[in-house]
Amino acid sequence: MKDVVFKIKFNHPNKLKTPKLNVNHFKYICRRPRVMHNKGQNFCCFGKVKEIGYNNFGNINDFEKIKNHIKEKSKNKTTFYKGVISLTEQDALEKGFNIREKWEELIKNNSSKLAKQMGIKIEDFEYVCSVHMEKGHPHIHFMAWDKNQEILRTNIPKNNLSKIRTELTNYIFKDELENLYNVKNKSKEDFKTFVKNIIKEVDPLFDITDEEYKKYEEELKSLDVDLNETKIFNTNLDEKYITNIMRDIYLLKEDLPKKGRLNYAFMPEETKSKIDIISKKILANNIEIRKSFANYIQSIKDITEFSSKNNKYINKSVKSAEDELLKFTGNQILNICKKINQKEFNIKKNEFEKIKEDIEEQQKNFERQKMLGLVTNLINFMTKNENKNKNIKKQMADSIQAKKELAKKLENKSQIDWENER
Image 1 (cartoon, rainbow, N blue to C red):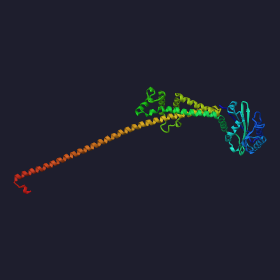
Image 2 (cartoon, rainbow, N blue to C red):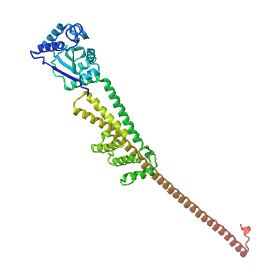
Image 3 (tube, rainbow, N blue to C red):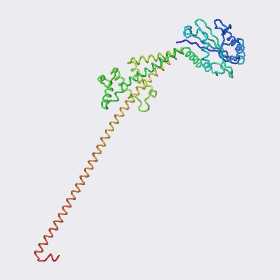
Image 4 (tube, rainbow, N blue to C red):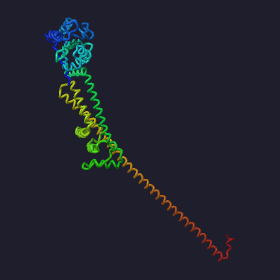
């Protein structure tokens, strides 16, 4: 890692010796051996102290004036923070910090960040600095304070100090960090692309017929079957690789919650572990995914090491990066489960529609048969009535004819003139 040292301390403002200690520290940092003097002076001092006329960042050439100012402010209980920023000699040479101007630039461009983390308004932030070019240990000293301090100031939270160190590191090594972030972003995008491409290989499964799909599903669930015989995927990858992944996914699907969103973040921990096993199997069997995964994790480690020496924190960052990629892969796996659910829903829907059509057709046939029976009965009824009417008419006709014949007989027998009688 790049070793940027940042330290800060202070003498408690309520102690009697504090004004003297603050003045002595100022004299020490400005006049000790190997300081990089102001031009024409025997000391090094630059910064911003508005209260004595140094409104803009630059050289402060009135040594006695600033010394007395620090003394008076200390007597008035102002807290003076004493800080140091240092680099290794190699890093200082590589980044150009072998000249005073680079150190001045470092403080000037980061003064607002220093003020923020120290809890001081930027308009009230005053400071003096001195550069020490010691061999093997180039560094800068600074004293900073709140010119309008109204309350007692003491310790700065450790987290804030850590943020200052990170800000300084990011500034000094911005080129190296930019390269690392480029590697990080590219490897992350590569990883996502490779995983998505693997997942896309199973899309043809959802375009086959329902019968083919059901047959394939049964084969996948039979763990002892030779799945290499099944040829559904038109893939450049190993057929067995894709098929084994699909088999694991089908087995996983049986354990997924039946309600709620299929999202990795919402899964029970036990289910997450099962999803992670499939994700790691995808990683283990594809060289491109393995490479992009490794590059991403290494870049996270390198970036973290820029701002921390704490192995526990570094390992935590690495673990978090691994979890991030496993989560992404896990959600891609769950997307396949969603497609499976949709496919199976469509199959059941199609089967239901077929059954419904059959029932409707049967109902129609029943109605047709029922109507045919009614029509037949009606025809039979009408036919019977018609025959009955014919019989009645015939009987009536027969009756009239019989009467006529009877009358004729009677006429002949009685010699009655029936014609006149009528």
